[in-house]
Image 1 (cartoon, rainbow, N blue to C red):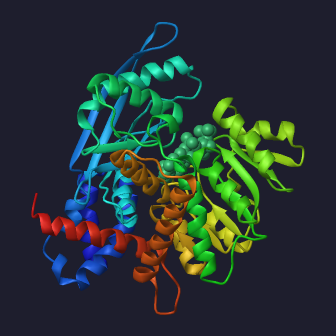
Image 2 (image 1 turned 180 degrees about the vertical axis):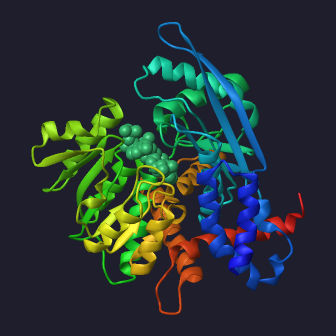
Image 3 (image 1 turned 180 degrees about the horizontal axis):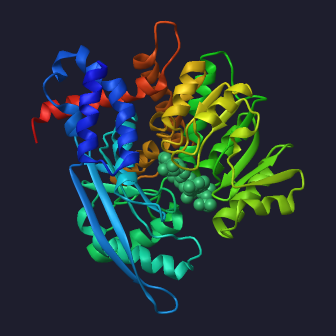
Length: 447
Ligand code: NDP
């Protein structure tokens, strides 16, 4: 079996040698899915995984825009349309200076499996730009978003490709992008998700990724007869996913000890309660400040510059910032300190070495493609509401989100439970996600 995986990965590396994040994401899937393919004759000889690792379409384009001083800037825009076997391409847009084809291909590849796991009819895609919204005025962000959509509009549509937010793309950016799409196409459609409430957005969409991650972690804890009540929780990031993960942990009776941003983390030994979290939301979403400013207001907290929060003792860890933010050494520290559960809110935040440590120690570990799927699932619910031209209540969307997260958890158990009873959620998520897409691809023939 190892030979088969190596042969496959050699081909992937030859074609994508300069794309380390993409190779990392494919390797994780190959290690679990290739043995499954070998045992299931219908997939043999169909080169199905090789077809899945090649994007159906990769669009790269120039985005030229003018700043407040009148200077002209050029950024690079992308949309990766990875797989449409089970529905229109669906996946976020990321605006961050680190964005390149490798990062977007890894995200688009993960998205295919994640969307399949939600049980909703959505293919996988991802896009974005190396534009950095940090430090830009609202007008500059608007001009950039308009310029970006001037090109992107011709590649997307409610039945073709429906982008959403991701790092650096929140409610403000979705508004500017949607406005330009509507202007160019002269149509009001559900072409983007994460829209504002008064113009087609869904209740619970802003909360969904963070809430869903905690619902999933709670299901994991329940397999051991435990829950969040009284548990200490470390969270990285302080953006959309981290904020609402923290909120749901508080709802379920847990104690949030940390939040972070790219400059470092804050540790509040007394816990980040609802009032303190409201301060963080205002600081990050409205004032666009830095997490270190928390310690100027709350003296129970300390700021730790240039490091991540995994050195803080906790029961549950929720990495909610970015890829590869938790490495093998961090994993060893978490395990040594008694952590029993790690659920990824971000995409691929744990390195392969970290995942290996979690599996060796047999602690509960959920990969982002399963645990953070609540965001895209609720985007799917936003698409349904747009198509039906109705708006569901907060309770209705939240209850559907809970059901979807519980179904994803069941799928992971169905495909990931090992002989000794331990659930390998990575294996479970990869195989469950693969089967639905692969079956659709087989039915549709070689295209
Ligand atoms: P936001 O832009 O709202 O927040 C990102 C947070 O992560 C910020 O606190 C940011 O700090 C921090 N961060 C970004 N890059 C780094 C870095 N290199 N090192 C340390 N910290 C960093 O993004 P989201 O919360 O939306 O996304 C977070 C993660 O969740 C991403 O991996 C994303 O792909 C994933 N995700 C998001 C979904 C969504 O619905 N939004 C859905 C599913 C997954 P700073 O402000 O300093 O940059």
